[in-house]
Image 1: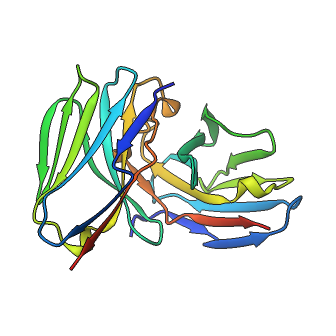
Image 2: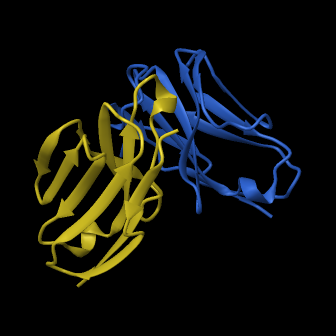
Length: 115
Length: 110
């Protein structure tokens, strides 16, 4: 158990809908990273928050947004969903702002299926 | 952008075999990570290395920075090693400096 909790584990929704994915980082970790893993693309970095502020942005679509709350949990909002958004969405957390995976702990992921 | 190529994409082997997974990348890096993703999704970091070789149990990772190449070896493979192995080179500059290979899907048959 990495200590990072993601909910829900599975989500099935229709095209055009909006969903919210939630991540609770390990106790004490200030950084939260969101990644998308689709079958043909591998892991893609979406966005990082550090202590409530956006720290780095990757290949995140305009239809997607995220935030980190004062209690450090984070939410990833996906709207106007398309079939191509079906993927595993991972959250990782680390104590510092660096992205090195040896210092980051991954959640189990949320599998999103858009039908 | 760092282009990462892993080979093979899929590998099925018998228990006890020596396994090699390769990773090549296109841009100079400061470190490279090997990750393991088990069925069910969870991702675990195995190694971070910036030069030479590291060993952890039956796993060995090597890197040649000049050649832009890294390998992950598994000795005396076991069915519990069945997983996806992902190479992730880090070229610095923040979280977006970490790129990922598409992974090698390894199945070890008893």
